[in-house]
Amino acid sequence: MQQVIKVSHVSKVFSRGYFKKHHKLVLDDIDLEVSEGDRLVIVGESGMGKTTLARIMAALESPSQGKVLWFGENISSMNKGEKKLLRGKVQYVHQDPYSSLHPAKTIFRTVADPLKNAQKIKGKELRQKVKELMEKVGLTPAEYFFNKYPHHLSGGGRQRLAIARALTTDPRVIIADEPISMIDMSLRAAIIKLFKDLNDLYNIAVVLVLHDIGAAKYFTYEKGEVAIIYGGKIVEMGEGAKVFDNPLHPYTKVLISSSPIADPQIARNRVVEQLRSYEVPERTPQSKGCPFVHACNYYVERCMEQNPCLEAVEDNHWVACHLLVNKDVDI
Ligand SMILES: Nc1ncnc2c1ncn2[C@@H]1O[C@H](COP(=O)(O)OP(=O)(O)OP(=O)(O)O)[C@@H](O)[C@H]1O
Ligand SMILES: [Mg+2]
Image (cartoon, rainbow, N blue to C red; front, side, top):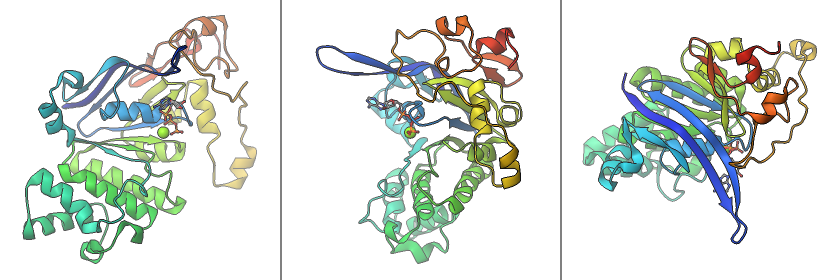
């Protein structure tokens, strides 16, 4: 299978201040690989670095350290022309379907304009292709929407339109940052299902950034991988079914066990582990130890000194935790 995106030892530091610079470590030595037809979900709470990672994967931000490869080529050594050629193959869908669409452009033009640019088609052929793309994302009957504007659509409809626009360049991967966070609960499953269909039917790799652990499970349980991110570091990664059925990192366990359950009976009887702290301290490139140590109930001295690396615990399942890899403590 062709490798589409590879993220290798990527770190990101944001700096602020003029005389006395303050450096904040937002991503810490991230390794990821996405191949043709893959599904990947990046999950974590607010401020963990998910958007920064997704933007770096889409070359909308540069890493401070490490490299990003598209189709096997380092993007920092590509010239403008090469990058432009590949840019259409790696599409990024923004979190906010309200502000990412031009309010004065009809729905037809929203899809037709980039299509004209990408595929140099016009007239009847263009109309037919716009119709096909809108049908692909479930905006049907397509002609009914042609002369309407994005504000005529629901949040879910706008997200579908943003996805149709992303498909105009025939991408091999779509990276979508929180595609369901700004749309109604009832429409969320349908948008995730749309990404599943795009992946299944057209073999487009899909990377989703999600807060919602339930949606992450729905997307990756049968096929795909999940990366759990805490404090800018991947703390657990693996096949969806393995991570959701057998979560190992103390953070993953808490994340999964505290996600909402619809059944009140089960919800009442569930024991949710409390963390030592819910604050996420800022990290700098000099910070020592595991980023989760201040919150972890099982930490040992080593956790305060050494940042654990991701290590395999079984086939396609990795965890970054001193306790699990060395089996010092049963958690
Ligand atoms: N351009 C920037 N300059 C300085 N700090 C930034 C910048 N962009 C992001 N950050 C900081 O980096 C950290 C990670 O931000 P990021 O947006 O990647 O998190 P996130 O996991 O996507 O959060 P959310 O779930 O709220 O979207 C945050 O503390 C944020 O304040
Ligand atoms: Mg974000």
